[in-house]
Structure formats: C-alpha cells, structure tokens
Amino acid sequence: MDNLHIIERTVDDLSANFGIDQVVYGNLMVASMEAANNAIMHGNKLNPEKYVIFTFLIDDEKLILTVKDEGPGFDYTHIPDPTSPENIENLNGRGVFLMSKLSDKIEFEDNGSFVKMTFLLKKV
Figure 1 (cartoon, rainbow, N blue to C red):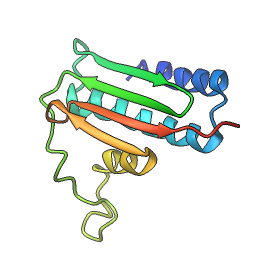
Figure 2: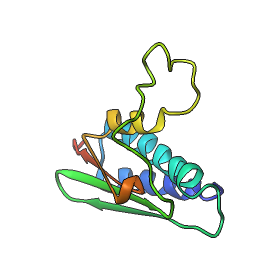
Figure 3: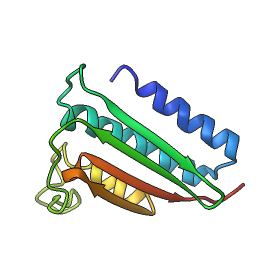
C-alpha cells in the first residue's frame, strides 16, 4: 500500500507526456487505484512478500493497463451489482464495478488474478 504513489505518478506522467484527455485521465487514475487496491488487499492478502505487476502500453488510439497479482484469483463472472438495493450499503464490492464502468474494455485471466483494461484515448 505504501507504493500506491508510484501508480499515481505514473498515470500523471503518462497523461502529461502523451496529452491524455482529462476525462480519460480521471478514469485511468481511479481504475488504476482500484486495481492496485484489489490486487494488494484481496489478491495478495496484504502479504508484503508478494508482488503486483503493472504494465502500461500506449499507442495513438488506446492505453492498455494490465495488473497481475500473486493471489488465487476470484470469480469475476459473479460480481454482485453494488448499485442494487440489497448491496447499496456494502462497503466492499465496488472496485471491479468501477473498473468496468471507467474503462472501455475489461478482461480477466488466470482466474481473475490478471486484469486487462483498455482506455480509448482522446487527444487534447
């Protein structure tokens, strides 16, 4: 958790260096932080000996963010909707929902321990 500032700085640098639109920047920042939190807390169970690997790939049309943790994964096909009345007061379960709403495409692999989010770029 102490290294989350590295993800923030990387997103800031990518935005500045590639002229990423502010809306895309905001979506990328929130989705990146949610992915990092999920990987650290839920995937790696706060184990400081386990790693989370972030990869940012960017071209003229899109930015692809991948996040891999060392956890066993999770059932990403049955995520409760945090906006439904029975879940509205739950504090957990919003990360993947946010990531899926903020990215243009989201994919899971390795039983959910690997996530790939695609963000379509709008140049400023």
